[in-house]
Image 1 (cartoon, rainbow, N blue to C red):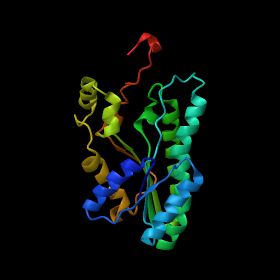
Image 2 (cartoon, helix red, strand yellow; image 1 turned 90 degrees about the vertical axis):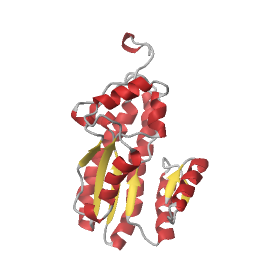
Image 3 (tube, rainbow, N blue to C red; image 1 turned 60 degrees about the vertical axis):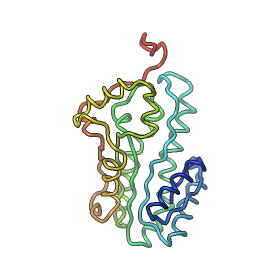
Length: 236
């Protein structure tokens, strides 16, 4: 089961999965709505006659704003509802199915941006840091049901990641040079493989820790790349 707010994008992913031979379905749902979030899980469980894995990687990325901006009230609501609340709601809906199956896997997504507090990203950073608290609590409470709950903090190339840099390839290359592995992560090989490890049987005794999948970026802190026009005398 895959989910998104764009029917067009969802259909493309669905076609790619079916070419690989997967039994896949797409459901358009807005996870900021509790009913839609929980119906998504219900539909998946009914279609596949059970549920084993829940991956919570949905997250609206709000526009940049300084911490003193009043815009943060609304931006924070969106960030929290699309990430933290959505992950709680889907987890709550999945738990009965996991118990029925004798266990399950939940994989949440946080961010190094939250850990190091990247400038002008207060709503996103706050939501991602709360994902860590949610993960730890669910891991502690639901372990007795043989449910593992983990949180990954990835950094890798994707269309959204590349769009962030736009035409500034030099900045993008500079980030790679600052990474101990001296390259950007690859979504499928580097990040997907690690997530799969947590989701399959080999991850059955791993629950609660943070897993940085970033080539070592977290060891050095986060390059402060975000800029606002006029902020700190820098218009870029």
